[in-house]
Image 1 (cartoon, rainbow, N blue to C red):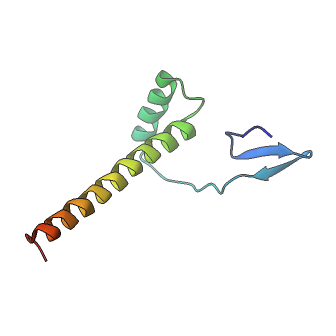
Image 2 (image 1 turned 30 degrees about the vertical axis):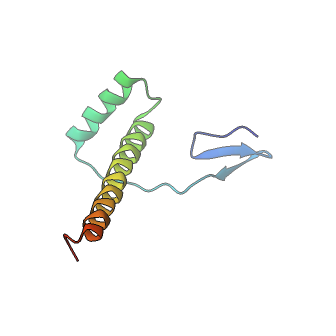
Length: 82
């Protein structure tokens, strides 16, 4: 069965949710800017654009946290920190 990109997928004649959706309140000016950016970048809608941006930022933050831990382990190994 092909993967669905939407929040629901038709299977056996009924909709089944793939994941839960949450609502997020943001400033209306920020929403307008994001909507324009999503259209300019060719996203099918603002939800896909915002989801992509949040996933990208979280991945970067998680990588940074992992890098910080690696550096701390190296410094401990060298005896610079306890």
